[in-house]
Image 1 (cartoon, one colour):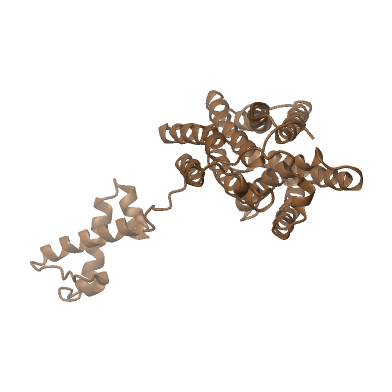
Image 2 (cartoon, one colour):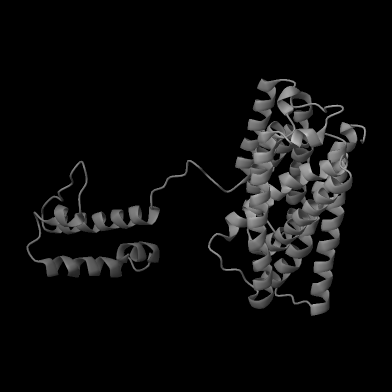
Length: 364
């Protein structure tokens, strides 16, 4: 059993996070140069990029495995994820692949500082912890089987998509983002716990754990290849970070019994909330955005404006109900000739032809 050491755990986790970003950059940057700059690469060079992606994935896998030997997964993974967010912002920003506005930068700093605070308020390292015995508890068995099921079901899609991408060069599945995100979250969490088991198992159990680890690593590798070219990094990375943090916290409680060694529940919950809010700030998702169709609202405003002008021309007032109503009901009291209304509206459309947005919305 490796002696617990949070300095080593955090150090390896930070390096592992950097390496995971590098695996994506190696494929994403050439793709960026091809699509935005018009550059082309020879088939041999394309294979070099893919080989670089595979090598860095292996390196990050080894480093991330080592990090779990020195500290609890509930602390190691948040450090790794925050390092990913930080280096994702730095590398993609320096290479000008993505632009990161102030709210994204501030959100990243909030996540990083929150992850650092977890060691002071969250679970501490548990000495002489029997990992195999913990895995035999009913909550641990159910949760582990759930994560394994999600890993292999989403992994199936990843394998199919890799073949599809080699043939057609593009993936058209409508739920591509959600499936890749689920695969990224569950493999990121499950691989951390399985890595920890590698250091404490032997014999037949070790062979099963190693086989599971290899299968998870293959899915992680597939997701990394697809993620680099098939999804928006600015949205995918924060969403994955949030999902990993929540799933990892549940894993720590259900499998590793972190509830026995949490230093302060108030502080732990507060810092976790800070991290999730930081990730929310980074992402492009806005849960409180208006669900109203702005184009429809604009079209209605233009139509009412035209109708008001028509009513004034007729020397009458447009009927405006407090509870609203259709445009026909508003015009009904003043319309004598429907063709005259159509002609007037057509004239207005031509008059506003210099404002195509208004014309398009009106017609729509």
